[in-house]
Image (cartoon, rainbow, N blue to C red; front, side, top):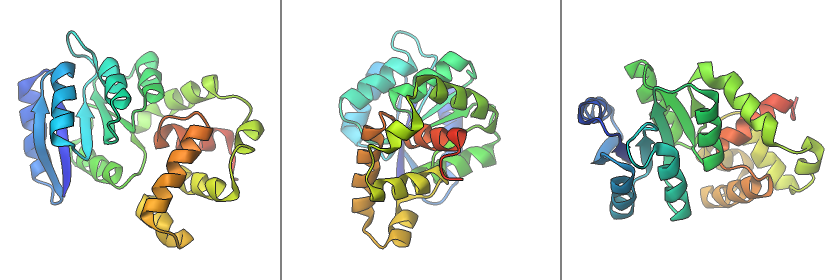
Length: 212
């Protein structure tokens, strides 16, 4: 069962999304927060598997909340769920460590599918944001060859699998290693490449056609 914390300052939206999520087997909403400050407390209290986080909140906005969550060591999958498709917001979320970025006009069935995929470790973002994500990664990454040279052979394998959206479980099976080992390799790979999330890694690989 994947536990989810909803963070949004609109109670009716939280209620609607919670009802939708509870209709999907394997997903459950364990808590809600109406502000960034509440999100920090609830995340520590509940230790959810995933956090669905709005950007445009009063006082402490979504980016500040995301940064604070990561600084506190929150390792949950954090999905931005917002109305904003602005370039600066998307790039800021990516750099702050978001694991996905979905727009609130996403169809209910697609939202559930995206949440399920994200819970399995697959990078997820609204298709219309692909060009924005790519430009954000391209603008901040040094030479590709220099970056790849930082990785071991195994880490390059992991990066290739991440770029195709495979889950940790699938990668573990294909490489005949444990899922825990995959998680360690993913963490080390992202650190060496100065990338904050699997989404950023996947977009960077595809944009630069590294494994074609």
